[in-house]
Length: 525
Image (cartoon, rainbow, N blue to C red; front, top):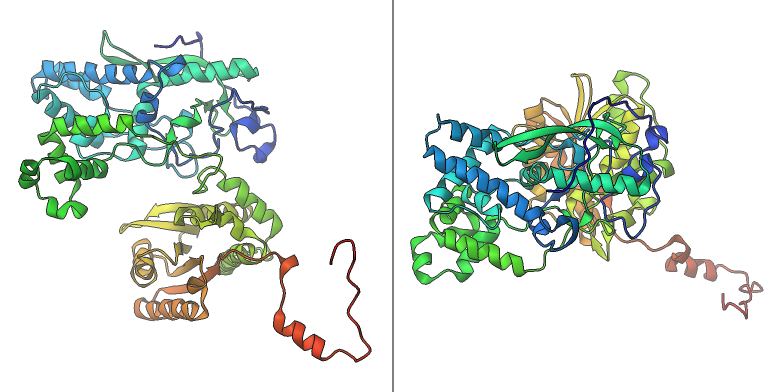
């Protein structure tokens, strides 16, 4: 375990952001010039970034500060294994209850990672996941397993968990390593620190319990609580080890006898429960799968390229907003719908007419749907703040997540869906999902925004079809839905545009004595 630097008392004072509301990232808040020695992720302080710490990337560390981190992670689960074994499956025993407490992981808000909306506070890993993890441990001990090489084995035994939950667990169990890492960064850059209380800062093997503590750490000016940093190289969008990956591995490598025992004919649509059953019945195959992953190249998310606009979404959206100020400001609540129409139109204009389309392309390839959604959010969030309109991203509408919900009180609300035309479920979006969301959320006004990357996807006939579909659904459901197609094709620079037909007509109408301007001998122009 790394050496920590605790303090005796806790008295956190909210730091005034150096650049007021403009402060967004850790480096900006503390005015840090970064160097090649700085491998930490420059986290976005006001809200979570949808990246996650993957324990498999920490496993690769063989020297330096992180060399013992993965072993520390596995030691934690060995402690839980011992408690479950002592309990003999008796859920009323002290050992079982102690194991329960250890497997309850609070949201590690200090990292500003995950999927919380609006702030770095999330739900953490609740009792439902705790129960599933205990079942996984119980199964493992029943198979005679006393120590595992990777914590992912347990997640496969219970059918896998969301990457955010896996990350929460890793952050909690290894928090002492991350605290010491952050303190080292603070010392190197002379970053102001304050004493702050940290939950689950360490865990005690002797007494089998979590221990909180107070430590000198940088303070997030937006929530008045500590910031804990992580190296970029530990961050991913999806975990390395997944139930789908294990199922595919078992199918491709398992013996004919194993295949005969399993319903591999439904491999593509098999349930989470069936995958968990396969893992529990074949722990040796799970171990082989994880061992194979050890030898495979495991790439973290490329923060510099940011292919899905997970990291730089706010800055890029701010730039588009500055280039396209809002032409309409809602002066009274009755103008709410008009305001939503205007901000969507502003976004369309920024993409089509102001080179915003470039932000939706990465290395000659149109970005994924989430990137388009992130860019839209980063643009409109500024307009909404200025007009006191609430914006919620991916709210749960009962039948699935809604991309964006705008509201100003209960009676004035609107839903906006952003879909790529290339999405295989594109037409389901406008014909079924969008109206269902509006019914579930009791919202009468909706906008279905399509984004096209190719000529076929931006054709006038497709635009008319989207309009017709929106009108048809509106008539059928009584919910007013407007369709829009945004042309995000790669554009030619305005300086290189050449209209052949107009140019020919102009030449045909020239006076006989008129001549073309001379060509510059030095430039050829």
